[in-house]
Length: 397
Ligand code: YNC
Ligand code: MG
Image (cartoon, rainbow, N blue to C red):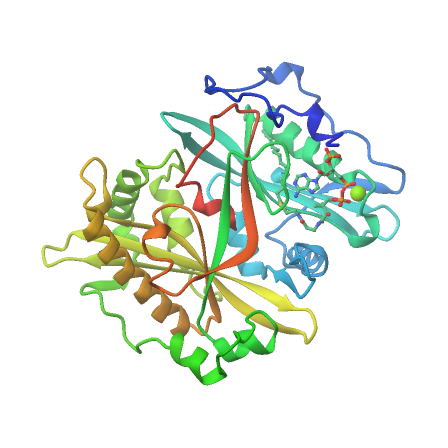
């Protein structure tokens, strides 16, 4: 088992049962790294995809729309629209060479893809550069032919040539070896639609009207001073978020440029990210909450589910070492309830969150239910002790 992964610098199951010294597993220099990619099997060739070109973006969109991640029962498949792909893969520090495709030489058809963006990640008290790998996809007709390991080795080689030796990624499947595992939670916003498409069963002894009432929300938000985040708030949000994330064992470090990219909606394109701040009477930013939307195709009827994912949040009452836990619980319940209202207003159908950060303080009260899905977090070429609670929420994308 794990014929490929056992050759890679990742911890094996069953080793490091005692506390380990954290750090790289394997040290290399740029000189040792191959200057050219591994050859592909005859009939296929490497390409870098130009996501700034609408035609090439459409090819990536169509590959993922037809062949990317599905749920276990093949009812839904992610539908990452170009606006989301641009947001996810053209983040600060992005380079075109990290958008790696495989084409069939004759037909020119794009049949596989892998990507990465640079992320500085802190694990406990050490911060290091990583390639955050995402959108690994192989056309359904080419599955099981060991192409995925070749793509993974290529994105590793490209990273290594830039002096990046660590990787960060998530997957629904178990590989050697998760640093953390989170469960998905779902909160209905549009129960009838979720029921019609098979996402939400009608519980025994319930009726549709009871479910609709259970998940009903006020029309207006309740937190005093809540307003959409603007460019002028970036420095305040970075400061608040950095201090808030300090309590977690693993978290990304945001520059102002990154915070602006990840949190502020782009003008004149379909909105994919919603971010709000709370400004108090002294004009101080005391709280922050954000969520993004990724659609999922409903495979049986060609409709889409619009799914909100809770992204980052922070509050002055939850900053170590002076965390006021009861106040934080109250505050987060208020903020998340407002986020649900705002997501519903944006016509999103369901709100997802993971069992990470301080989500345990509001999931139940806000009527989130545990799902079947898990998300495993992985570090490449880094030995780390298990990480509880807070991990990199960005990586749920
Ligand atoms: C996966 N998701 O175990 P072993 S998540 C990593 N992540 O290797 P083949 C995976 N490895 O067990 P197929 C993986 N899925 O023999 C499978 N593998 O050691 C491993 N699905 O390769 C698997 N997207 O080519 C096995 O498999 C080997 O044809 C088998 O292709 C797999 O983006 C895949 O779920 C996933 O498109 C491409 O099934 C295909 O099945 C597919 O025979 C639907 O591969 C879409 C899907 C994955 C979403 C994601 C994160 C990927 C992270 C990759 C690892 C990055 C490491 C860090 C690199 C940078 C380092 C630096 C510096
Ligand atoms: Mg394959």
